[in-house]
Image (cartoon, rainbow, N blue to C red; front, side):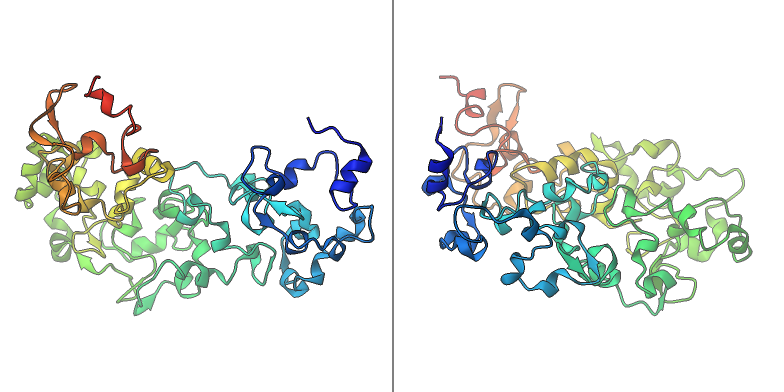
Amino acid sequence: CHKMSAKEMSKRHHGLTPGADSCQNCHDPHGNGQPYYLYKSAHPPFKNGKCNACHKGRGQALPRADMSAGSVCFKCHNRAEFQRPVVHEPVAECKNCHNMHTARYPGLLKAKAPELCLRCHDNLKVKQGKNIHQPVAAGQCLKCHAAHSASHKGLLVDDVASVCSSCHKMADYAVQHAPFKHGKCLSCHTAHGGTPQMLKSPPAVLCQGCHKLSSVKKKHKFSLGAGDCLSCHNPHGGKSPSLLRKFLHPPFKKGCAVCHQKNKPLNTALCLSCHRKIGRYYFVTHNHLTDNARGNACTTCHSPHAADDKRLLRSPVRVLCESCHQDTVTRHQSAEYRHKKMADCLTCHAAHGGRSPAMLKGNGITICTRCHTSQGKFSHPVGKGVIDHRNGRPITCITCHDPKGTNYRYNLVMDGKEALCVQCHNY
């Protein structure tokens, strides 16, 4: 469409001759309301018409050799910021990541993170929803890494312990596990994720890398297999040199023989023989009798020995739930519109079972109106007498809204302009 001679092209670009394939570097091919469809993110010299700040003379572009290692860029940008001990390889030429004139993305970047980073670091692509580190899932590479140069290995913005502790606030343990004490988080954990709790190996295998099984057996009066060390010990620290967790299961505190008896199976029934009130939840319509029920359903979430939580939970609630409900986590992370209160699943869901679908702590109205107090009073009719003709059940908040996240405003399950309404209202 835009046919012009080289002379005319040069005239329209202040005497410079752009490359034949560079139109989209500066101009939005779809339009954006800007003059000449130029991208909004503009390099100050270009924006102010000071071409000579970077280009020598008129009628020719800056020779490529002068762009190497950002020699022209350092007229404005502090060279020291790019010459710390660990230098990002693309810094050798700024054009590897940045457009020189305008760009679609802030910082004159050619693409937004993490897309730009993954063009080179494609080995770090982690399947969504599979125990990924939160900054990785959110594409926040620069939360941990410097873009140009750094004083720490891996282009980390600080030492490993400081970077981790900026988000993960750890307790001040009286006795600290050596790797934790010396800030060696990556001795046990992977930085980007992919495994439960981001551990490099299953707990027993990981622990035996330093603590040989033969030595461990000498310190335990009972029989040890390749069990889960974290069932009793905190991997970061504790009150005593054994790093035993804070809360002990009463039978474990009294002695192993309370539960471990000859010919006595360690199953769910054993736990319910003491926790009788919990047993009633397994006989309601929607219960949490897990796939591990053939062995011991309780120990899927609870430690039978010790924990740092009064409920003897093996991990924080969110981590426990995610270990099974990965599909829900993935859907929530990838949804454009998400419910904000997803930190603690037990805010809305019962832990063991309930009479409401999805083990909610109430029906699809009461559970929502605890926070959304005005809803249900003046909006769309809901509740008894307002029947969804598709299934014969009363319409509730979750008939139209999905709190786990959707791609429609207000977490609607369909487009609220028409598609959702015509499900019931045929006109």
